[in-house]
Length: 264
Image (cartoon, rainbow, N blue to C red; front, side):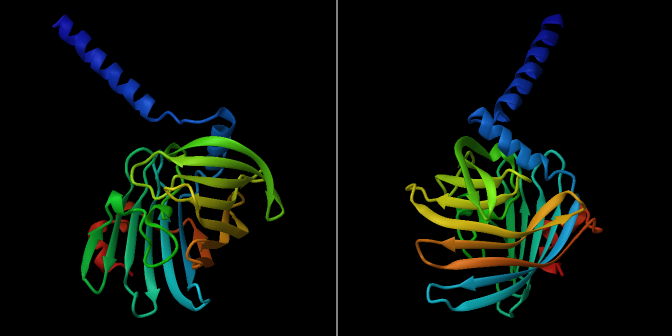
């Protein structure tokens, strides 16, 4: 019995050691410290809801517009939950996308397509695909979690009039469409000003510019404009936040994949 207790204790110790190893963030100390500060400054916001205008532009400059409603729920010690509902135009109305982000495990994502009248799970192998025909990929539609990347400090530059740290972050999760990303984080509030996404051949694929930051609850900054440009296809997608509110009456049950067909 005594030997069994020792064995059980050893198993428990090993399990905790493996968890600590899994949570270890790779990279140089300065870069990791900046990444952690970025995340720390955006903890505690709780819930929010937003009305968003999506503007898709093709290589010839023709535009198509979609109206979205986005609901978000912060999850303590894990990634956040988000529900995106397309309200117009008619060809996408009723489409609903649900995302459960995770820090260490694979993200979970589902989409309801009214034309098919069924909920489809987005597999990990498909996360690099386009999000409802936009220049954002499914993997872009998750919350930022420090543990998802390894980090290198590249230097300092000025973007959008802000002095920024420049980091290289390499996805540590499976099936990413990116070899790495370059991220410009301002020194004043640790807000992301720009991201460059490099494809699996390490060629620049897309650039994301974030602007018109607004302060909520005297602590949380949100960009009202996000412009994703695909430098290879010359297409772009803008997300323009028209309204945003915090401390809304959202709860866990509002983010249920079984009720995606009935979302409003």
